[in-house]
Amino acid sequence: MSAQTLEISLAHRVAVVRMAREKVRNAFNETMIAELAQTFRELGADDGIRAIVLAGRGPAFCAGADLDWMRRMANYSPQENRTDARALADMLHVIDTCPKPTVARVHGDAYAGGMGLIAACDIAFAASNVNFCLSETRLGLIPATISPYVLRSMGANAARRYFISAEKFPAAEAYRIGFVHDIAPPEELDARVNALLGTLMETSGNAVREAKRLVREIGGRPIDERLLADTAERIAAVRSSDDGKEGVRAFLEKRKPRWLADFEAEQAAAGEDDEEM
Image (cartoon, rainbow, N blue to C red; front, side, top):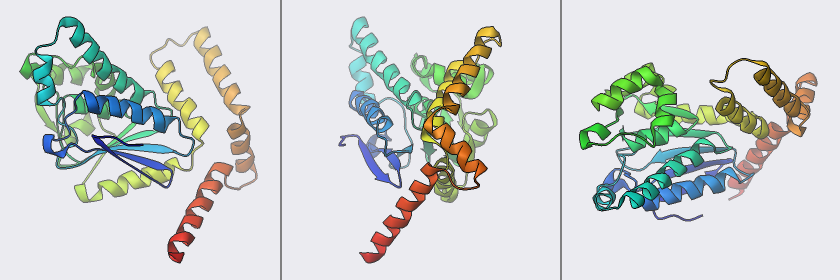
């Protein structure tokens, strides 16, 4: 898996996708949008990957749209603008619907579309010195393509303020309004992310995939007969799945489920190989 704008590393069943346009603060252009979409599609379909971390090189997480790309967009026709905007919307949707758990490691400032990337991930951890900004209205624009994800993350009341004002706000405020799940001193960020990844390895890949669908498809629906039937059908299907049966058996037999035992065996074998080298 190769890319011009990304660095991708694989270890311990975790894929780390680093935006690598440090000179432009990881601002995205059409190439990076296409590569993020393709990378998350491929990693999401890889049975050997249990989790994906989205991170960035350099001082910033992501500054939003690349200035050169924006200059070109200024001369686009209405149809070209629609096509271009749809590519960004599709990329965010790919990240949002990725069947693997996705974690945003926000080590530096995130502006505009960079906030969309964070919001499209399942879980977001940020360094305590990070700043956020939905800066679009300063440019005469609106955060349209990222709005479904940002609204879901911070809620309509906070979004109304920050969509309109284009204010910069700190990590503590992002945590308060629910945009990120946790904040940590910069030197502790990796430890927090790694602890979460360790917890994810204890979960069933199939159950995680179905849990993500559950949140996406059940949220906001009225509690009526159709919803009751839907949720009953979902748990019945998961109970009868291989992982569902294995997980219950392992719990009753007071042993580790197959997926955790296999992962730990792989790590032990990898450690023995490292020692021999």
